[in-house]
Image (cartoon, rainbow, N blue to C red; front, side):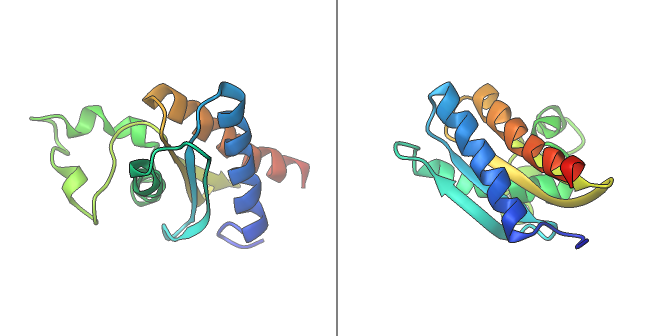
Length: 140
């Protein structure tokens, strides 16, 4: 199997994120990137704020580049912390929740980024999207 996500897997992840956003009643932007941080699939729900288009893509890309959920970076980028200023690097990273790396057999294969709700809502939707890949891998 490929070391990155397939188009079909990216759309399964996207669809799961959109379904969760619909379930919680919050229009979202959902981005899925491959292991190089390149966009594979994107969805903008009706009513999702436009500023979050870029933020969702940056969350996914940040998650791949750092190999971490973006929420894990929040404390590390505060003034005086060891990664203060990180958001100014690599074209603008995002250091708050909503980006989650995706793994297959323990290997990083991509990430999902979600934006347009509260940070808690973004994380909820991103988690549901990421679980769609896990479910697909387990059933394969």
